[in-house]
Length: 258
Ligand code: NAD
Image (tube, rainbow, N blue to C red; front, top):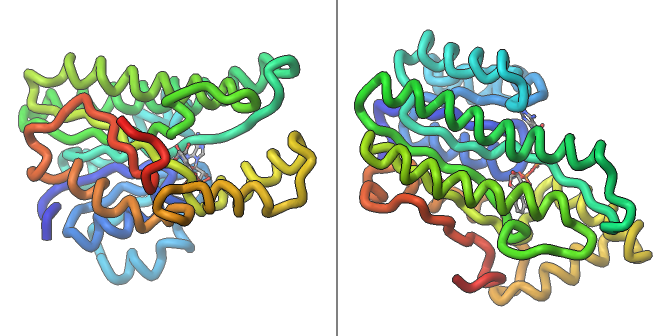
């Protein structure tokens, strides 16, 4: 097991990519603090039974200051330390740039940028206090690599995640805290059902068509699955990536080349 005696905070653990990453971290021996807006008690009850004292479930909004403090406190109170942050919680919305609203801007930036940044900061402060280094993995998007006509705010939030990853990696390098980003392409999760429905509305398509087209356009021939992230998420959390920091790794079937 590659994450034995480590404690990980995983945000957005109730769905999609982060849910799969949380399960993989548990299999690799980590204690996991599972964070989501939703109550995860029932969803993770079978795993809580299997992994006994290795799981803490926290219902929290990562864009709220007090909730962020509560997440870190829970990890420290239950497991004495935080070694890994998988900063996966995020939200999506889209519309034409001519119709983009202040409300959507605030909502997306509050969760995807403010939440991601300040949770990273709170975890980094704890890691510095512990003095043993750590691993922070932020989740960006291929949308953060370039703008899209209908997706301006979301693209900008995910570009910000890459930028904060680089700045934090440089600021925290001397503390042996590695900060990297994973950059998903198009991944078959509940979020993509929402994306598909929005494209159907704004591009006047039947439901399911956009999802089918983007999957076919991936060089490796299909949409990604949450399980396609397990390898990169464990690698960046483990000692195997000790000499890698400030990077943004595409996990996208070849959609983006960099
Ligand atoms: P998802 O919608 O399936 O899961 C996201 C989870 O985050 C949900 O359980 C939700 O309740 C939780 N969440 C949302 N806001 C939160 C908040 N403020 N506090 C705590 N939890 C919150 O999404 P997914 O597809 O698994 O995406 C995970 C990450 O990957 C997101 O950051 C997303 O932007 C990014 N991403 C996804 C894709 C994709 O194609 N699915 C592509 C690129 C990037």
